[in-house]
Length: 127
Image (cartoon, rainbow, N blue to C red; front, side, top):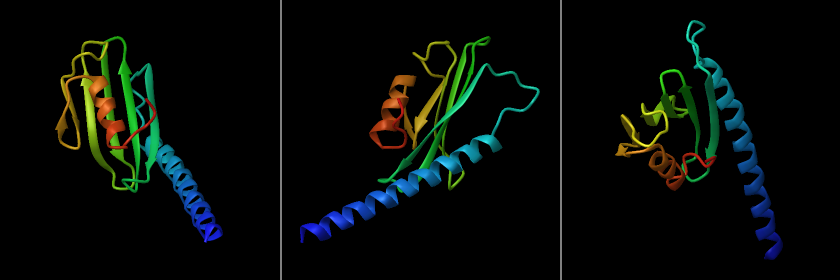
């Protein structure tokens, strides 16, 4: 009985690793296809990806920070569905107050709250 349990644990772990790898590859392609236009200068344009086993989905958080205009824009996408799951826009340069902020329809008031909501519902775990 114990050996059967170990086998299924290992099988599930390998499937999860394969899903994470597929997500990382798909997220990179998604990011490359959503890159900044050549005529737009963005000092910091980056992403974090996350495979959520609980949500059975691949998510990417794209960060677009413009230091000149002090705008921090973060958008969370479901990679496989090509849908926006959340976004936060801070125009005060430090992320304390957001002009717009929501995750799955839930409003938030700061970048910290935005990131907390993402972690809480397992959409991103990189912060």
